[in-house]
Each structure stands twice: as C-alpha cells, then as structure tokens.
Amino acid sequence: MKLTLTRRAFLGTAGAAAATFTVVPRHAVAGSGKAPPSERMRIAGIGVGGQGRGDLDQWADENIVALCDVDLAQAGDVFKKYPKAKPYRDFRRMFDEMEKDIDAVLVATPDHTHAVAAMAAIRRRKHVYCEKPLAHSIQEVRALMKAAQENRVVTQLGDQGHSTNTIRMFCEWIWDGAIGNVHTVHAGCGMIYSKIGDLAKLKESPPVPPTLDWDLWLGPAPQRPYHPAYVPSNWRGWLQFGTGVIGDWVCHVVDPVFWALDLGAPATVQAVARDYDPKVHGETCPRGEVITYEFPAKGRRGPVTLHWYSGAEKIPRPCELEEGRRVTDTGAVVLGDRGAIMYGSHGADGVRIIPETKMKEYRLPGKTLPRAKEHHQDWIQAIRGGTLAGADFSYGGPLTEIALLGIIAVKMLGTKLEWDGEKMQFTNCPEANAFVNPPPFRAGWTL
Image (tube, rainbow, N blue to C red):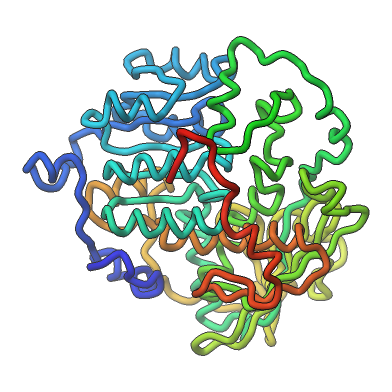
C-alpha cells in the first residue's frame, strides 16, 4: 500500500492497523526480511543536547550507535551516557563514515536545520524521527514529504500526544457527534518567546564559546555573528532559526482537531498583534498574537474557523465553562452547535465536555480507533512491522504547515492571506509568497 494512503483510511477503524506498505530498512537490503522484535535498531541522534536527550531515553533498549551535536557544553553528558556511540559534531561526516551502520535517525536540532538533517537521512533510506515543527519553511516540508514517500522510509513527527489514548478518545467523541457540528476552535499557548527586548543586544560581538561550533550551528542559515541571545535555548524566539510559540506548540495543541476534523489546508489566514511592527521587530516574534484560519467545508462537516492565541493573547473564556473553573492556558476550546469540549496539550490531556453536567450525561461511544504504544515506540514498532507510524510526515507535514502559515501571516501583519495549498502559493499577495521558500542555503548545505 502506498504512502499516499489517507490518514482516515489508515486510522479510521480498529482493523486499520493491519494496513502496510513497503519499507526498505537495512534488514530487507541485507536479505533478511522484516526485522525480528529481538533485533535492536541502530539509531543515530542529531542534536542531542536538548530535547534529543529525552528522545534517546525512550530508545534505551535499542542500540544508540552515533551521537551528533555542535555544542559540547550542552551535549557532553549525553556523549558520556552512551560511551559506545561514536561522537560527531557534523552530521554530514557522520553519514559519510557510518552510513552502513545506521538504521534510523533522530533529528532534534533547532528548527532551521531540521530539513537538511532529515533529508540527509532520508536520501540514505534511513528511517527518521524528527522533532516538531517538521521544517522551517513550507517548501522544506513538501520536499521532506516527497522524499520520504519516494524512499519508502518510516517517519514520525515528534508530536508525542498523537500516540496517547486521549487524542483517540477525542476523535471518537467528535465523530460520535458529542457536541454536534464543530464550527469554531479557540486554541493557543500562553508562553512568551518574543525577544523584542534583546534586539539592541545583537550589535554586540561577544566571542564564540570554545565548546560551540558556531558555523555548524548556523548550518544552512545565512551567516551572522554569534550571540548568546540565540544559543543554547532562546533560538525559538528568533525567526531566522525558530518559529515562535506557534511553531513550538501548534503540532501539540492543534493535533486533536486537525485529526478529528480532517482540517487539511486553510483557505485563509490572518494575524493581528499589538505593539509589533514586522519592519522593526521582524527578527523576532510578537509577545502575543491572534491568528485566524478559515478552513472550507469538507466531506460531511461544514466550514471551521480556528483562532490561535500566543503568549499575551489568551484563549477567551467559553460561556459553557462553570464559574470557578479556569479556561485552559495551553490547549483548546472546541465549539459545536450542540456543545463544547475543552482539552489541554499533548494529546487532548484532560479532554472534557463542558459544563461538567453535560459530560456526566454523555454516553461514551465504543472504541473505533486502535490504541497506540508510546510515541517513540510507535515509530520503532512501525519500522519493524512495515507500517505507517501514527504521525508520519504525510500527516505531520500538513500539520506543521498550519504553524508556518501563521508565521507568514505575522510577517504580513493585518493582511488576510488567501492560500492555495495545492499550488503552494498565496493567490492575493505575491509579497507573502517570498516566505514560502527558505532563503538561499549557504554553500555546503542542501536538500
């Protein structure tokens, strides 16, 4: 079965877990067929000093054969934790030297290097687990999706909540008509990543720490001087490297409604933000923004409006919520014509119909979706079984594009952008199309 198998067709029934497609892992190339459960996967990690260290912990029973990170101050303890893994700073060299010794690859670098690292693995037919967002530009997302399909590798986006039972329960409630026809979603995250207050600091020229390879950290991004305002942990607020709060959290928070409502691509997107001027503050994101997406009617559902709230802009309190209960700060309120559901992040944690009296009255539907293993293990199981992982790039790519379209809307603040997802272009604003593709990569870096 081809990788173009629809998500609903694959996950829409309990029997769908039997659907398979052809993969070409090391074991098949070696002529041994499907990998037996007892055979440990040979995994390489790229970007292991931050989120990557936690990802690696989930594969403790596998064989970690190589580790790559450009910042020894952040990743040195991870290298020590896996003394049998060969250490690298440049993943290109790692692949040159160890291509035949690697089955699967973790990519947990900053956003701007996701695409080049993941593509380097895919081109060598290595299975890939990539942290969210999948890439830094829509063009990169599409390139990764196409390459993964062509090379028939098993992929997984790092939106861990997608493998929880609660997100499946949420989908089942929506499909059961628990709140009727959904028409509006208010979703968001209350964290603030804006670095407007640090813009003046970029004129400074501090020395590069001896433990950091700044040139490798930049990777494909245009050359610029090192500054501690970027590294090690604040890069998410700088749009040359990260994608703000929306890029960090949409793949977690919007995932449940994206799946349950089969949202696909929006027809329009528009952003508003207070005390923010893209021409003055464009290197960083606002302290808060509201981004509105309009999704056209699809199948049996009508049109859906999604409002995203970041940082200082908060999800509005729904009238259905009882006095004394707090509206979620990081999560969503889903409104239908017969009620409302509120959930938190990472797989609809705490999903409840509101008010609680209606929750208690609701007769829960039977399970129609197969329950998954833990997200990292779901990927490993898919590799061994030759199946689709739950959030493979054919699903995680379009989900990531929701965030990336929001970033473009922030750059075109106030303009209602009309988006043609199939043609990958804005039809009413040629200026916005310049942000669909990444800036030219530096020499030595390519997709």
